[in-house]
Image 1: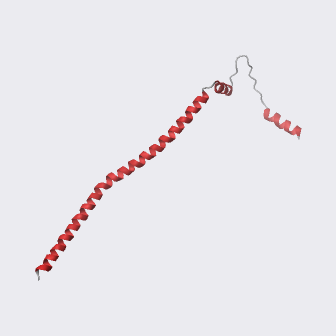
Image 2: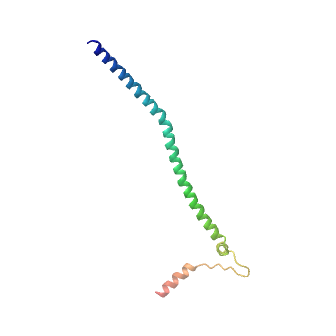
Image 3: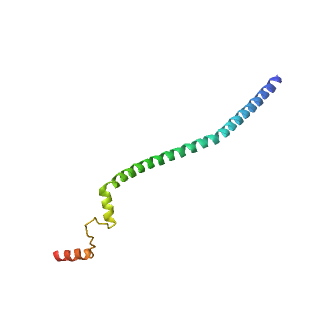
Length: 111
């Protein structure tokens, strides 16, 4: 009868050792996978951010193309020339000053 308890003890010891080795291996595998998994998720986040940035740049590009198309017209060129105080051939450029005071005095006169 003394053999059975000794065998049972050895089995328990082997089972405990096997469990320890199994948990050790599982922990080692988890540690080995942690780095690549972290890198994968970091890169995935970076790709998502860059996709968002690409979409923003595409929309900005389409807006700029529209502005370029509008700025390439003759009317836009003429507006810009007028803004720079250019006059057409045969036109005379007059600079009128004191418009604000004239408007104020006119408003007072109509009250």
